[in-house]
Image 1: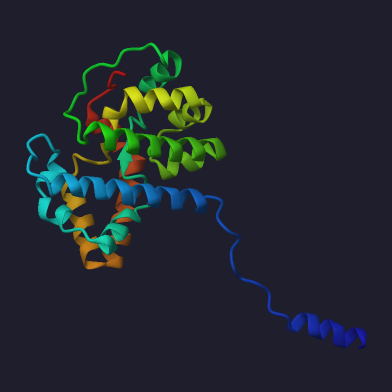
Image 2 (image 1 turned 60 degrees about the vertical axis):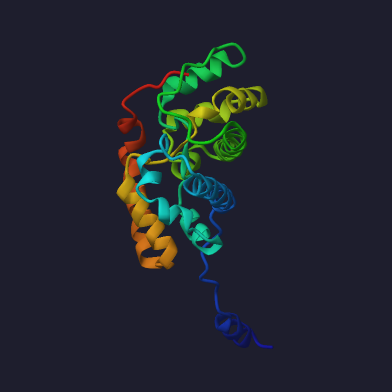
Length: 227
């Protein structure tokens, strides 16, 4: 084959226009997996008989929570953030946990625990696994996927296994739904999930990014919850 023919053949070969794979894809999959477990546990609470101590975002939308089937649960879980929060914007709390693991007593929770101890421990363990593995890979990625502050992401990346066990065993009551004070947001998310409304879900995901950027979780909690 002549050089001219070879050049023509090479020029005829289509170049790939696919972007390189995003480094956060495996961690986003973990976020979605956790979210689905978390949503199902909240749905179980909504199906129960006692909602007196449940947050408004559960009580106001009890039928939507209780009626979640597997498909709707998957749709709701595809939010690009962890749908649970463990003081992820509260740097002082994490500093205390980091330096006093194993001996620092916990204060009474500021709100009634949402889950009974067994699911609370299991969900807290799973959330910490997602947070720790993501932060160790990339603290900026962890700050995005978990809507945590960069300072907290750096602390989480430095934790050892003893810290993770201590937080799971002694601080699981700090596991809360993200944006639990924004009951209308949860109502729209659940409605869109029931209807499999992709456009509405996309809009809600964009709104969730705005919430995370504004740091609404920590601002609404009122302050520095004690460990």
